[in-house]
Image 1 (cartoon, rainbow, N blue to C red):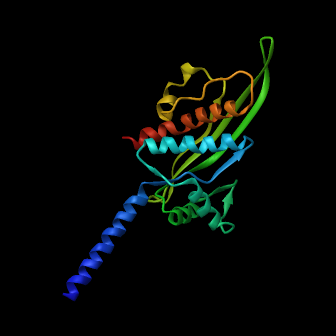
Image 2: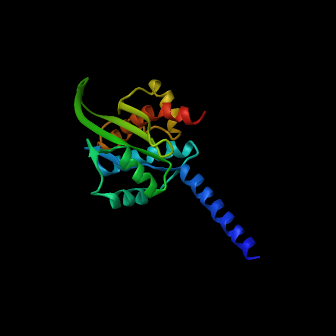
Image 3: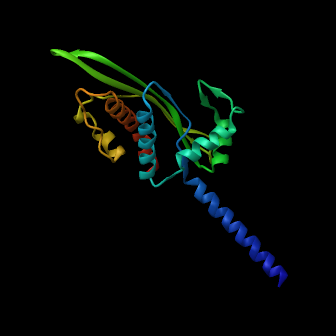
Length: 203
């Protein structure tokens, strides 16, 4: 009887371990991200845009507070190059946060005033370098560098981007604060950066 109990316990533990591994394989951490300029609202919007795209692919995104907290717990004992982690650091992070995938990178905003017609117009551009790391393969499996989006981009050029984003693209605005322009620009840039990845994992 004791042997049977032990066998059942071992089987249960193995099953739970397998279930945990399967669950973590579908878990995604959207961090770390480096932002150049841009306000707090625009930065949060960038992360939420990536989150929605990942969730639309059937992945489970780890709460941002958890993703940030676990990363901070590994610092300062992480080696960065140009502000971004290498495969060794990503492996440690994936293990600590229980993620099968890490989506990380950089966003740079450039907002300026240009002269259009009879007056000035504020334009915001966002440039995104996006990387996807697979814990199973132990390496970055997808990268898209220099993806650009402009707040005044024509709607006709955004069909592929809109299909990836699912949610409506932030409308163009005239006048007012820079925030909606930054949001629209980064939303477009992220959509461009992630559309090929989304197609790959949806096959």
